[in-house]
Image 1 (tube, rainbow over the protein chains, first blue to last red):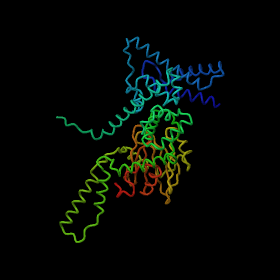
Image 2: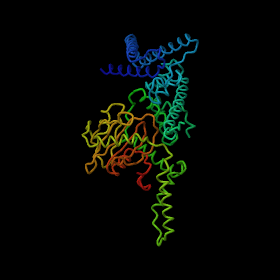
Image 3: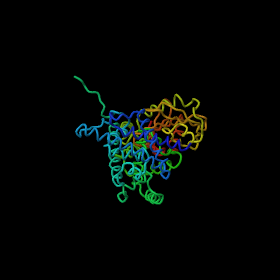
Image 4: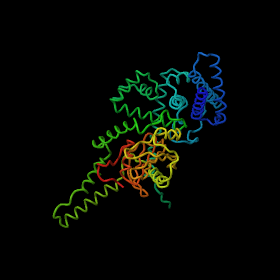
Length: 174
Length: 283
């Protein structure tokens, strides 16, 4: 029973991660698509566990997230090729949310995926490096850049909110 | 001092990636380095904001009645020291203290009309400084205060929806987004909680009984986008109210007695902009 709950937690984490990561509306990742895709990924991961009993659940989780990341990267590459390198994701503000959500979505994909794996999905840095198929140092560097950019974005938003009442005035219309 | 700490190590600590030995060593450094503590708190707060923004449950419920209170108390002391050192922009706290002192000065004996006019001018100038100058530090949003006061007025005297005097189990029943254990003040008995319409989102209204059986309310609303602000006292709808933000939440304490509200602010470990010994309370 507990393993069912753990898988369900992992599926929820992957769904949240996917919804946060995906910014392109052409990559259909609404709730229905998310459930279908995540169900498939975790089915694959659990089958892999059956095939190799030595592998633990953590590795299966890393593999499922890694597969999802590769899937979205492939989508990005294909669109970039289709559009002669001019692929542009949907503007982050189009999806709404608070300043943290908009800030995360405004990050470039490579920074976004590292930050979301660690901060949202709760991966360790080593697990994130494994899922992203990158050296640990690169992941740590991307994390640092992502955090700095997000902090700057959130501070700017906060300042704008704080400054609003002072800047708001009625314009005299002649 | 933080310059000597590798940022990667700070991130590893915040993301819980250090082994127990390295974690212990880092925490020892953390104890001695307030700047490093601030940096860690900053990244932890960012992690919380990201998790809250995308609907993930918090990693662990923040307990305002326990460890966090101790930290907040320390922050409060540091903040008080920084005010004394004149770190506040334009030394506003000192201006207000001076104004309060000027008001509190006894009238000179045998004052004639000129002295009275002079005293009146001083008092008038002091009142302008006291009332007219806005706080230059970060301020909690006014809408939060209004929502907290309205919730207290409408709901404080009604039966609670969740009965419980134990903070942590009570908070857990409210779901991950609102699972913030309420503080316990010495003379207040936690009765339970209700949901309440907050400023921007659903909030929790924790309800307490004081020694006279009067209700005191503490509204807690998740506000991911606001920086920590010290508690500001005020009065609304016949309630004494204090409003502050911190740790990704907005707080409004409301009660009919000043002392109850002050006790809740102190128990929550909020930095009080007008502590009881700093002169008259602004209303």
